[in-house]
Length: 67
Image (cartoon, rainbow, N blue to C red):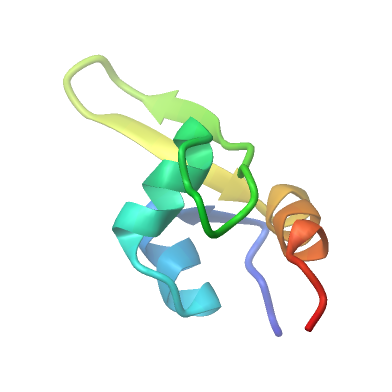
């Protein structure tokens, strides 16, 4: 998987084949099916952004249960 250095919620969702709602629940720590996901906040007050770094994405993937 060629993961960008930083990605938006929608980019992360597309790359990992999960919904944006699932990603937001992981960030909030409320997902019952997936591990928590660390994220960075940026943007402006009028247009806030959430970014996930490649390292945070890797940590999330590593926290997934094995089959």
